[in-house]
Length: 125
Image (tube, rainbow, N blue to C red):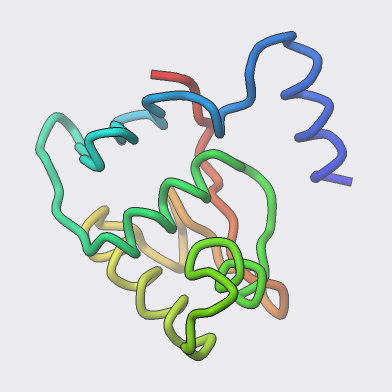
């Protein structure tokens, strides 16, 4: 149901989806997609390229739950030979850099038995 609402919300505005935006903002978090840079409270944060790609994907699809397998296929690619623990490691890296508490997440929520979702509202920007 949340996925249907998310699709309707994106299509109802008549604007391009978040996945087409050059920059995304979620509160104090901002990413510049072409430059592959991110800032939290105006301080630039450094993460691995794969962690950035994971954050970028999750921010472009807020409130949608993605399984580890789906994230591996989408972010790592079909030809990548990695385990689902690779997703967990990149999520942990993002949480460390963002200061996100998994027990009370501001940015990335673990949905037990399903995967992960970006929980903060996202806008172009």
